[in-house]
Image 1: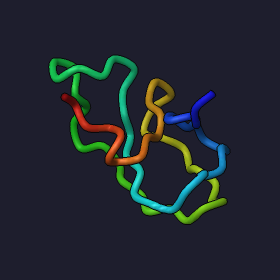
Image 2 (image 1 turned 60 degrees about the vertical axis):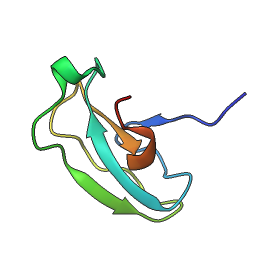
Image 3 (image 1 turned 90 degrees about the vertical axis):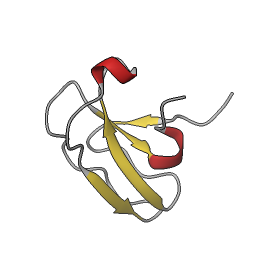
Length: 65
């Protein structure tokens, strides 16, 4: 079983890095405008997103292919 890749408010960061908001549907047609980006250390708690439909995802995993 792999590591979780999307996180919600209150979850703990599994690894240090830069995390960004992603929307529910991750396609280039529904890309969110001006997503928040945060730098986290391992064990930091994720803050609230801009709206309840968004989640946090590590930047290198959030790219659209």
